[in-house]
Length: 253
Ligand code: 13P
Image 1 (cartoon, rainbow, N blue to C red):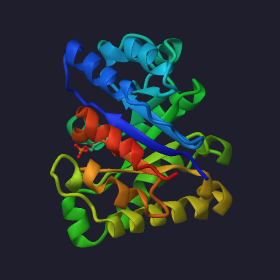
Image 2: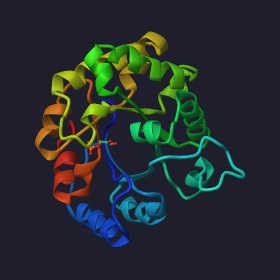
Image 3: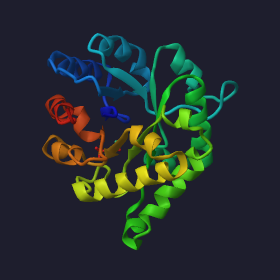
Image 4: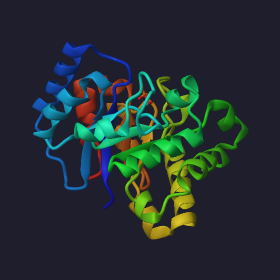
């Protein structure tokens, strides 16, 4: 079975004390992960090293929430993939809709970030997903296909296999309005068919596709039980230990 992942995206939340206590509350819980399951915490930059040390004992991983599209140099305020690699970070979220919307990250910029992550051996968690107007027009498939084409279609099959995709419909992020299990499954199956069209079914079948957008303890099991939904990228509910623990436990066995 392909990898099943529960990924927490803390976004720009929590001070150091809150971050430490949230992590330790989750790490206290004895969760027996199956071989194909993984738990990832995308924590704010200042906590990356500390969090990485803390979670390693449990076999979990840490992700950065973003990285620069430049390799190194005079880019004040940016964090390079090389820096992340040098402190032992294994994953990086690339192209979250909040980065696309508020920081004007284009598919071209995200393509550069994906390439840098792969060069340095980090797994990009590549986010895609449509806004409400696009869904209302019924053009969400074309829109998501465009995001995949423009940022990922230059990759070889070997490179693609090192990527995780997260489908996050913008209308479901932080709104409490989750996509239904059918809506998530339909889009995930569509994304997999786009990957299959380009790289072949075997490659597409290996790619983990996460759902993000108001995932909670109460809906995780239903969402994750769909055949093409391989776990979740979780915002708000990942800031609450019992909620996130329940979400981890809802991953496919
Ligand atoms: P919420 O779970 O708060 O809707 O956020 C989803 C998200 O953006 C995860 O990256």
